[in-house]
Amino acid sequence: MKNGILILDFGSQYNQLIGRRIREMEVYSEIIPFHTPLETILAKKPVGIILSGGPSSVNSPQAHLVDKALFEAGIPILGICYGMQLTAHLLGGKVTKGAKGEYGKSEFEILRSSPLFTGISRRSTVWMSHFDEVEQVPEGFEISGRSGVIAAMANEKKNIFAIQFHPEVTHTAEGARMLENFVFQICKAKQNWKLSGYIERTIQDIKEKVGDHKVILGLSGGVDSSVAAVLIHKAIGNQLQCIFVDTGLLRLNEGRQVMENYGAHFNMNIDMVDASERFLSKLKGISDPEAKRKAIGNEFVAVFDEESKKFEGAQFLAQGTIYPDVIESQSVNGPSSVIKSHHNVGGLPEDMKLQLLEPLRELFKDEVRKVGEELGIPHHLVYRHPFPGPGLGIRILGEVDSEKVAILQKADAIFIEELYAHELYEKVSQAFVVLLPVKSVGVMGDERTYEYTAVVRSANTIDFMTATFSKLPWEFLELVSNRIINEVKGINRIAYDISSKPPATIEWE
Image (cartoon, rainbow, N blue to C red; front, side, top):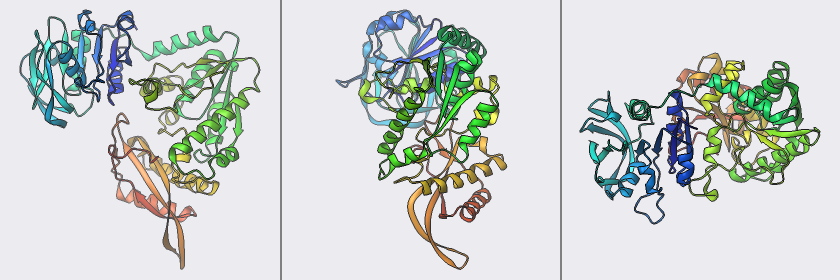
């Protein structure tokens, strides 16, 4: 990664944002666990290092620490939140438990000039999230800003800077400019990260790695696997064999659309497998969300393994693994504490003989979408809303059966259709319908009904780490409600989810 910015991950929920913000500047960034050995860090030859935030306390016996020699390596360093407390702690300052902590928006005041604050207003709004605070800065450091506490410090001679707030989140009004100052003014980074070059380089790498062998890819119709498939197909053509597994838990007409979009339009080899009865039988009697996820995941691996054996000569298994999958599957606390166990990077058989091919492994989601468009995938496919791996299995609360799936598919299709019709689809980040295991009394015509309740969910977000419910027009919601109740037998009541993340999540399960 020579000439890039290295981000040491201490467990912050925002660490991916830091990486993305830097990539948006066309500078390469990489996120690695804080406990990565110093020699490995230095071997990557970064032009700058960022110490991320995190939930730990530097005064805890289990504190997440780094080798103190990192600060003597001559590489510019920026500590953010926990990263600031860690810098103070390791270099002889004093960190104490605050009286009340500081969370949310706060007013930050610059006390002295600093390369980090070039072009920044003397007073601005920043986003805080900490309980511990720096009470005394280390020798050689100057206090360069305050909020209710010491909020910025710097040792300019050693190019070490630290701030208590999060510049990577949009709530920090001038945070993007601060990061730019660190990357370009302090680190002197060069803009060496362009997606057009990435595509050309990756196609050449795939050709060299695969040679004359065959590649098998599990195509889901989602953005990641679709972009991976088109990229690999561009490199090796008919040597790619896609397997599309219809789990019976997909959106309405998903199978037909995948075959039309990628089989016919891109002329790919796709083997479509209808395994809906197998999946539904595995879900019988299961209501617990995590148990449903595991049942679906295990069955998918079994079906895919059976189908892949039908294609002789395959040497590679391709996956749509993207960079957040990699980050979230390498816990800062070790393998037992990974954020997501169901990503592509986990769950593969230990005795698998195929080699992995993951051409999107270095990319964030927004970069994957840009690559997709450059490869000629239609805009509406590249910018589809996220769809969970377990599909409708986790949007049907409680036990799943074929009747509930059919009901939810129709209701969800109506909602999405109307979002497109009213040009709202790309103005919201994720929208869908949830079917509740709750029935209520209704009246249709002169008849009494006793049917399911559905919830319409739409959220707006920049990063999917925090989200607010979409303020959709009442007239629009009334239209959607009327259509679902009138056209979908089995639903007689619609609710609209007005909760935000946190404390709720975007998906219900």
